[in-house]
Length: 364
Image (cartoon, rainbow, N blue to C red; front, side):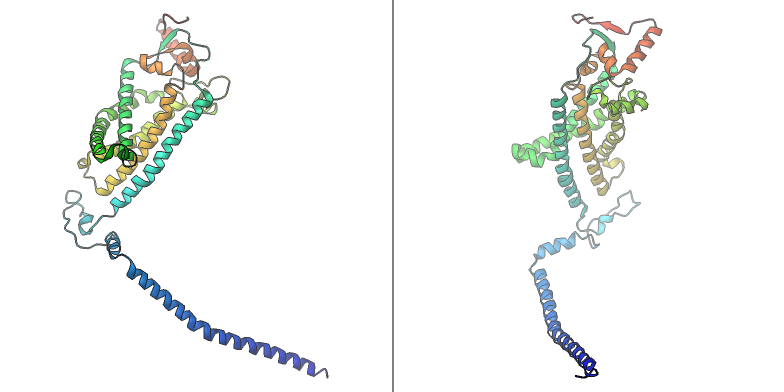
C-alpha cells in the first residue's frame, strides 16, 4: 500500500462516519417530531379534560373571589360622601376569608403554642432556681414602697387585665377548646357574656388604669446605665454574687413599663377601634387589621404578664407584700432596690423622720 492511499482511506472513513450520524439524526428527527406533537396534543387534551372535570361551582366561586369589578346592589359611601365605597362593584369581599385564615389559623395556632411554651419556660425556671429569698432574712422593719392610691390603680388595672385575658383568649380559642366542652348553645351563651364584659372592662376600667400607671410611674422608669448592669447580672435571679444596683424600678420593671407604653398602647388603641367603629367611620379592612393587631399584641402582653406575675408572687420573697400592704421589708429593699432605699433614707433624714417602722412578732 502506497503512502498516498493511506490519507485517502482515512478521509473516506471520516466521510462515512459523518454520513452515518447525519442520516441517524435525520431518522431520529423524523420519528421524534411527530411523537412530540402527539405528546403535546395529549397533554393539552388532558388539561382540557381536567378543567372540564373540575366542579363548576368551585370555578364559579373562584371567579367570584377574584376581586374583579362587576354589578352589585351595594350602594353608599365609606367616608361621609367623600370616598366612593369600593365594595359597590364587588359581589363578595375576599378580605373576610383572608382575615379568618390569619386569625383562626396563624394567630390562634402559633399564639396558643407560644403562650404554652412561655408557661413551660417559667415552670422550668422555677424548678431550677426556686423562689428567690431575702438573703439576710426578714428584718422586721418595713419601709413604705407604694401608697394607697398607687395600689388601688394597680389592682384595678391588674384585675381588669385578668378579665380581659380570660375573655379574650376564650373568644380566640373557643371554637377549638370550649365548644367541644360546652357545646354550641353553652358556648354561645358564654361568648355573648364574655364579649360584652370584654368590651366594657377594656375601655372603661382597664384603659384609665393603664393611663394612670403611665402618668404615676414614668419618671421612675427612665433607663440608665445601671439597667445594663442589672441585665448582665441576670437581675440577681441567677448565679451568685452581689445583687445588681437598682432604683425604685429595676431593669426588668422598666422593660415591663415600656412594653405597656408601646405594645400595650397598640392593643388598647386597636381595641378602641373595634369597640367604637362609628367614631372614625372604620372600614371593613380597618376593622380586620385592628382585629389582627389586637390579637397579636394581646398574646404578647399576656405572655410577658406571666413573667411579671410570677416574679411578683411566688418567684421572689417579699415582693407581693409591697403591693398588698404598701410596705416592704428593709432587707428586701436593700437587696432588690438599694438605690431607692438609700434615697428614701436620705430624704427622711433631711425631713427629720424615720422612714422605717418595726413590725411586731418579727425579729428586729
